[in-house]
Amino acid sequence: MSGNVKEFSGENKKIFKIHPIGYVENSFFESDDPEKIRKEDSHIVIYPEYEEGLYRIEEYEFLNVIFYFHKSSGYSLKRKRREGEIKGVFASRSPHRPCPLGLTLVKLMKRERNRLKVKGLDAINGTPVLDIKPYVEKIDSVSLHQNF
Image (cartoon, rainbow, N blue to C red; front, side):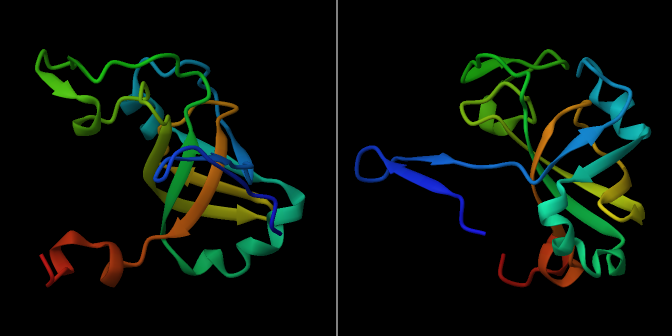
């Protein structure tokens, strides 16, 4: 399916229109405590037109989930973190970013048709899911990379 629209703004700046493939279901409506959210189970509901893309996803224990911080508003390029330390936005996991995308590694607990039960997701109820990729140790594990 090719529904992506690209608008070019300047030589290296692109504006992309991206459509979600699904959304998050859980009992959290605010993201005040991401650690608490990660400890609870969540479901990723994939829209029916993308369900076939889940074929054989059960073969993977862990998944990388890319999502959109839909309730994020505004950002600062530098700000004080919870620990009191000042960091740049790209040196933090804050949802308040110029491009509010989230990336989290989750454990796949179960698949039921177009629903994935996962643990470790720090997204709130209703969060749009943009993509899911399997965690492949020989590709994703920092300790196994020889090129660094």
